[in-house]
Amino acid sequence: MTQHLDPRAPWVISTHDLGRRPGSMRRVNLALPAPADIGVEMIGVPKDVDVELDIRLEAVMEGVLVTGTAQAPLRGECARCLEPVISRSEVGFQELFFYSAEDAAEGDPLLDGELLDLEPVFRDAVVLTLPLSPVCGEDCAGLCAECGVRLADAEPGHGHEVIDARWAKLQGLVPEHNNDQES
Ligand SMILES: [Zn+2]
Ligand SMILES: [Zn+2]
Image 1 (cartoon, rainbow, N blue to C red):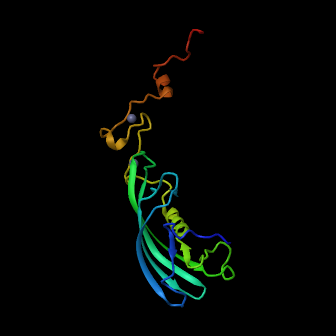
Image 2 (cartoon, rainbow, N blue to C red):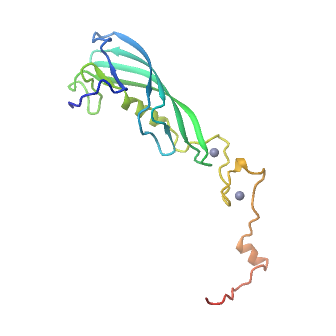
Image 3 (cartoon, rainbow, N blue to C red):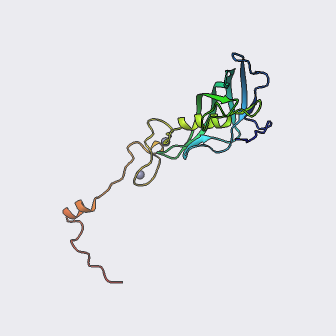
């Protein structure tokens, strides 16, 4: 892979200060704007919000080991009642960026000179933790199946008098045959 990283891209980190001597270590705290399209269907990290990163860069024989945590706000929609869901994601990650493709396996990330790209690492770490069915609260009762009102906003004991057609027939409330005029 000869794909070159853009040193000005926010998620591209320089390892210049780290050097390549194994055992050399740097700790970095930074806030980066969230990349676009981080999320699953009903919840995700809004684009450009601050993602707080606390990372440790460590030079090892084959490359740079990055270990860290990322904290980011989440915005989504309750899978039961469709109200907004606001929460936070805190994820840990660890990735070894290789100096040389010869040491790396297929799909392993590589350094581009002194640069490495944290965006895919963050993306994978966050997406794995996102709930497929986020809820506004564990006790969310969802929507009324009859009228669609959000049950948390409805009167206690909200319900509808439902007369099942089969019972109605047994009670003689509905004639056996409808004698509708043809229209
Ligand atoms: Zn809800
Ligand atoms: Zn209802």
